[in-house]
Image 1 (cartoon, rainbow, N blue to C red):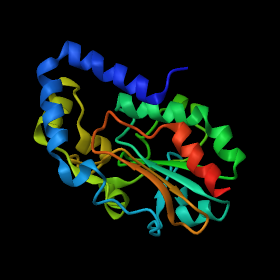
Image 2 (image 1 turned 90 degrees about the horizontal axis):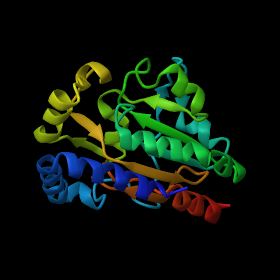
Image 3 (image 1 turned 135 degrees about the vertical axis):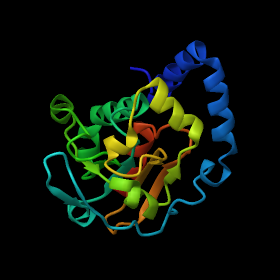
Length: 216
């Protein structure tokens, strides 16, 4: 099976082919977002991760402290179920979930979507890890990965993809998390992280597992 990176690159190559003008503008916007490009605003390795209590699609509250009581935790922020790159990432992580659990770790994914819109029933069945709702990206902001999305990308979502993010998220539709994954040790400190403003790039499951194996 191809790597997650290969899958996401193939996805955007199709966009680049079908809509080269938009692809070029996205390249320029993302390359200019210097504050987020290298994760300079995100919590650093060795820092404690902010605790959270967030609802899942069933309305149950899941806390970071509760997950940490079981062992290390992988926290990944994604834009929403409407994002094809996010879906590739979540499926890739699901495929390695048994390996994550084998080293005593838990996985949780967080997006700004309302709990009842974050996943379809079929998606809930397919994913065997918590998917939580972070309205207005408040927790993402605490982790330093909430981003005011440029108008060009918002216009593309609204006009070309017919997405009303204010309705989907039940609040602020212009702030989204940038792709970010944090591996936390049992003490809740960041042991490894992947942060990139480019929504086409995601943490490789193999790299996440390698970080977890170092902890064990």
